[in-house]
Length: 88
Image (cartoon, rainbow, N blue to C red; front, top):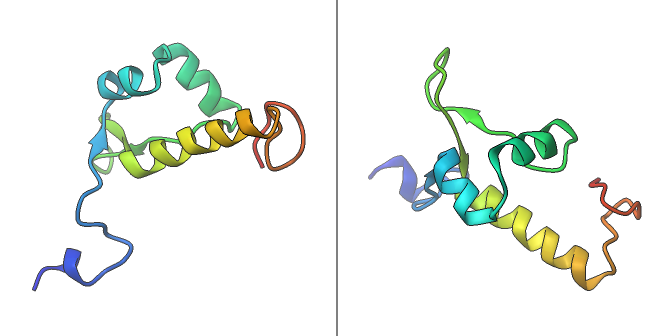
């Protein structure tokens, strides 16, 4: 059997999003996405090939970020630290 059927850390279906996919999914410009990353407010991309330039985001990480934003809206814009607009 393949590793994907046994390892919980390796989901069967967790596509990798490139920037072109990401900006349409979250409706933010690439420059704003990179700003959020620099502030620790958005998941960091990972290199697709060690030493390579191509990078991407796991769909599950982006979906978790979107759910966290939705929770921020329902709790009055307060993140886990209680500071408006800041993540834990």
